[in-house]
Each structure stands twice: as structure tokens, then as C-alpha cells.
Amino acid sequence: MLRKSDGFFLLELLLSLSAWFMMGMFFMPLLMDLFKQPQQHIRDKMAEQFLFEELQANLTEDRTNSNYSIFHNGTEYKVNWNYSSGYRGKVVCVTVVETSFLPKTEICKVPE
View 1: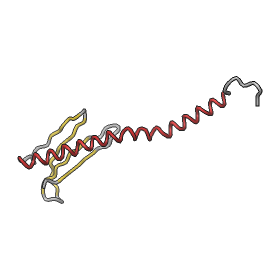
View 2 (view 1 turned 180 degrees about the vertical axis):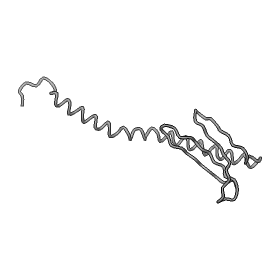
View 3 (view 1 turned 45 degrees about the vertical axis):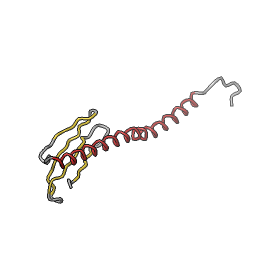
View 4 (view 1 turned 30 degrees about the vertical axis):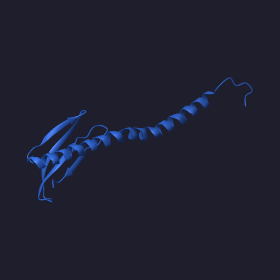
């Protein structure tokens, strides 16, 4: 060991920087998923709200032939009525298109 040490050696500096870099590379994907999760939850909740609003509006008037889009906070929600062979009738679906960070979401429900 040296008697006179006036600071860090270059090797110690590189070792500590590489340790910080490795920890950062490990936690970066976790942090990205942590920030995407609330956005996905808000988007799914709004899609469910638009779905149930469409089902409620269908009770008062016949809206089974209407397909339209709703823009809310820069996100497009597509409301579609489709024929379904398994349910012998029409099914209402709300689709949210895929973005660069969030996957496509589709929620369907049969009117009762």
C-alpha cells in the first residue's frame, strides 16, 4: 500500500463507475415497466368505462349499427359492434390501438 494517497486511483474510479453502470442497467427495465403500469391501468379503465356507457346507451336506444371512435387525452378508443357466432348476436368491443410503449387492448361484452 502506498504511504501517500491523495485521492482515488484510476482503477478504483473505473471499478466504481462500472458497478454503478451495471446497477443502472439492471434497474432501468424495472423502472420503465413501473412507469408504464399506471398508464396501462388508466387506459384499461377508460376502455371499460366507454364499454359500459355504450351498453347503457344501447338499453335506451338501438345502437347496434354504430361504430365510432372516441379521443380522450390523445388516445383513440374504437367502439365496434360485431357479430359473434358463440353468442348468437352482437357483441360490443372497445379497442385501444397499440402505441410504442403500451400494447393493444380489446374489451368485449355481450349486451344483456
